[in-house]
Image (cartoon, rainbow, N blue to C red):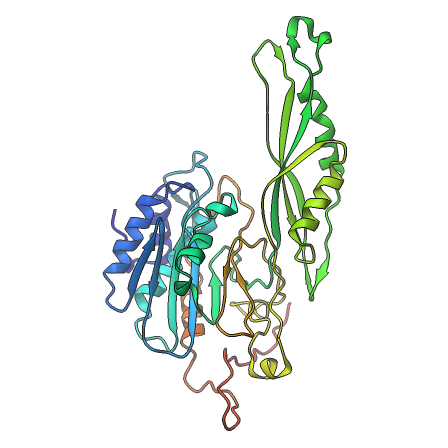
Length: 386
């Protein structure tokens, strides 16, 4: 199919949703995105597997990266997309084909931005970190990911989220003894023993630590269970897969140690993990004065509303240029079977355009011999919560 990048956000999102792209099966959607972007003369387009990168080459002194993943979780009877009461339903409509639609509209409309822009559409974000397309790009074509500011278009309700949680998956195993179900007392049912694992999870109290002024809400949950041999056999093994989302004040080894402590007495195997990341902080007073290395990913909402909240987890890094630069992480969010988004983007494309194309008259103070601080922002007036 061909994508019409001139359509509105809701229409383009619906077109993207209707192309099935479960992790590992993004080829058709990646090809459609590549074709659409290749028709735009102001962009150079590159591909790596099922990841597509489009870049302006205007010779600007700074570069903004707008990125998002094109894969989804497995289909749950929610294709094709449908509209109902001003909402768009369908697999991936929220996480995150609506964000991809906004990025594609930006790619088509911003032909002469004041800063160069890189658009990254990558695969396999919803699965284990080693398959992540952004990670693969960082290994194969790190030059394509150079930038000064990165925006990951995950669903946040227009919030710029500062910092992100780590993620870890582990398999917790119980052992039993096989027996014929007609003589069940001669065996030990491993699935029954696994009830203890579920009791641990039910009683678990997640931390809510404060890290650099942001409150993170951790989580430890069962996300899968397998066991059984045959319909007349007492099973001798049961495996519960758990997912731990942890705040960035814990390292991956510390997170793994915590999971093993929680499930003390059970076999625990860590199968996948990715680190969290605190929000970026200035590396020096001089950088802070210039606006470099600031909490750029955690200061404001795009819609001007109140507080900032942390993101959920980091898969790979979009690393800014410069020795002062801190990693700008990718991130993921929880998802449900019936995702939905509003029928319009609420002006998100326009607000992002304004971030890349600041209004005329916006200025920054500059001392002789110094570069201009970036990004430049006018302070928003406080708004009444009532």
